[in-house]
Image: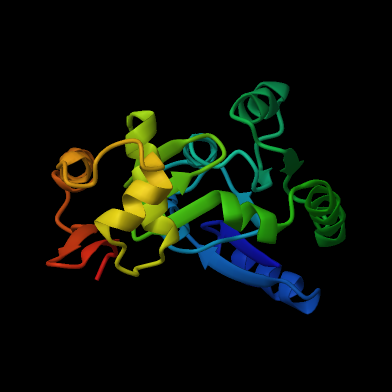
Amino acid sequence: MNILLLEDDLILSAELCKFLESNNFTCDKIYDGETFLRQIKNNTYNLYLLDINVPKINGLDVCQTIRSFDKNTPIIIISAYGDLSDKKDAFTRLADDYLVKPFQFEELLLRMNSLLRRKTPLDNLDQDIIRIDDLIINKTEQKVFRAGNEIALTLKEFQLLAYLAEAQGRTVSKQQITENVWEHNFNTNTNTVEVYINFLRKKIDKDFKVKLIHTRSGFGYYLSSL
């Protein structure tokens, strides 16, 4: 089980990760909210631990951002703020649990295990969320995010993007696209595929330095950050 910890207290962060690793977890430490959000774009975790009072982006805003594209991964807030209003704010932003510092590590472990037993297994979650560089495709909710910002797509644009993403960097031909996305509902000699690829490029790539949608001349299209 992979845990990502947001905690700017270096001693507590080191001790907590050491404890979790002794209980068969892996634990990555992040000290500010901005770096934390960059980290989760290219890595998959089973559970997030968030302190509130951290530099750059506070833990509550981090929680809210995560929930904008990921409704499943458990989030536990660990904070010195113990007022009911603070807890209410955290649960309003869809945190799963709240633990007030100082706390016993064993109690945190019990709460983590309880949440992990109730949540969807990671293997199933991976089938619903595709990550390519800073692009996130949520197949269940049919939502797309790039660099943390939601991108509005039509249904057919979403289906085309998801099909390219599921190819995992392999080139797919125009014929394959028409068979799988349009189910032969138009003549393959038309330029419909090219038009929709152009739509996606304007929405997915235009405002970003790294281009993800590529053409392999004479063969087809592929999705990759390389």
